[in-house]
Amino acid sequence: MIHLTGNQDLITAFVDSIDTFLFDCDGVIWHADVPVDNVIKVLSQLRTMGKRILFVSNNSTKSRRQYLKKFNQLNIEAYTNEIFGSAYAAAYYIKNTLQFPSDKKVYVCGMEGIQEELDSEGIKHCGASDDDENLHNLNEMSTIKDDPGVGAVLFGFDLNINYKKLAKAFTYLYSNKDCHFLATNSDLTFPAGGTVYPGTGALLAALSAPLERKPLILGKPEATMMEVIVDKYHLNRERTCMVGDRLDTDILFGQQGGLKTLLVLTGVTPSVGLEKQSIKAEYVIDSLGNLFK
Amino acid sequence: MIHLTGNQDLITAFVDSIDTFLFDCDGVIWHADVPVDNVIKVLSQLRTMGKRILFVSNNSTKSRRQYLKKFNQLNIEAYTNEIFGSAYAAAYYIKNTLQFPSDKKVYVCGMEGIQEELDSEGIKHCGASDDDENLHNLNEMSTIKDDPGVGAVLFGFDLNINYKKLAKAFTYLYSNKDCHFLATNSDLTFPAGGTVYPGTGALLAALSAPLERKPLILGKPEATMMEVIVDKYHLNRERTCMVGDRLDTDILFGQQGGLKTLLVLTGVTPSVGLEKQSIKAEYVIDSLGNLFK
Image 1: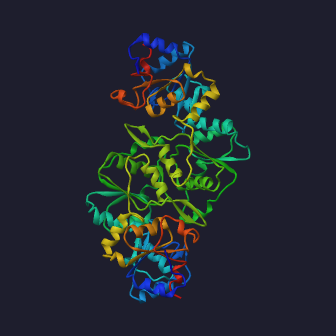
Image 2 (image 1 turned 30 degrees about the horizontal axis):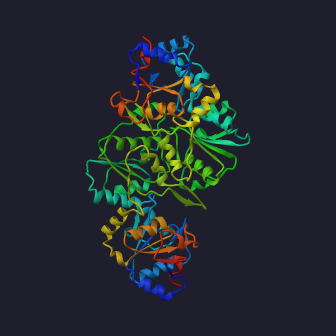
């Protein structure tokens, strides 16, 4: 691990070796609705130096458009084609990798961000907010039947998850072995307000536990997301760096994808005990805001 | 395996060896809302012979009172003190085994049956139908906080499971290692209308996956339910028989509890391949209705 904090010579050599920076957002660029100190200037400086910037997030609740709105609100320069959330990664994968048939639809457990990204790629879908109203009683269970028109189930974080959605998704996957089983990410928890709450991976367990199938995970640290990003942006992996605050998603994702990795200490990873962690970043800095003075 | 079907001598010897019969309900006594052929007469005959009858079900959606209503509707003789559903098992365990403090409450993911059984045992509770209205947006997440007054989380089947309930149950268990984690049963699926749907164990996975804790399961085939039944009814295990249609719940439950076991073929277990199953019942009959002519 190379500690960059305060060592301008090392920082210069590191920055010179990179053409493209992949940034995780929460804990790196911002905390909830507040930008990390000096990060706006650092990003601006990287742009001035001709570096390519991408924002890579496992949060599937937002579309690229919704992310852009957030960047704008926080006065952080960003563009739609620089934003790569797991909702978009899923839509891109379904369209370009799966080459999803136009006569099939995707059943979605998830929120508006996923629906919007599927729309943007011209993929038919159902479920999500259409099924926010739950079954009214146990007898209505029998209204849930197999639908051969459903060619994939896509599972993302859904604040409005309910039994109807789980039972529909289960039925499509249980009755049709050819139906693709995809998930935007598998984070068991997500941090908020100083604690953690159940994440996509927790809700997903309710669907994968009764099935004898596991989903293909699109988000970090899985290889599929890296393949999608490399496919879309034609990255030179040796001159690309993944910057993140989580060892088991961001840093592992970069390492397994053959990228350089930079850990920041403004998020979930504490500075003490870094040497004892099984996953070690190539570079570490206390804050992305301290990359340049 | 001793096949009883049509062999009246074997049946007589079997019945003579048993004082108490524990019956699973769905697939044994009835199919949904229709009694299995001739079962009403068989139960009546067993009563005439002085046998004790108990009904033992993993279905946690019904209280004993609600079960009794169903027995009455189907014209099957039954009494409240013969009915042992997993909702009641949980309430009995919390009161008598845990000796739950009167100043603590149980947070419930589940339906009216559980609430009613907790009330019947005088146990304070919250959640369940009180939390059927979900969080309205992601910002409301921060309203979910630890509550040291919650001394146990009890998880059962809940048609109205939602994110609020999962996040509350998670928070109580995550923040307080002394909070008991209980579940009425762990069936991953339940059969209905010729197919299966996600069961209690599926929904429960959304809670146990992000926790580094596993729940204590009250239902079949777990030992706790047997201990509760033996404690309440003072059974002589050698002269008690568990009658059921599922090998991995009913029959395993009886075997692990040291009871005799009778498999019926009117439920989920097909008659072909019985000899190849790893779990083998001591006795088998095509239908409980054929125990007596």
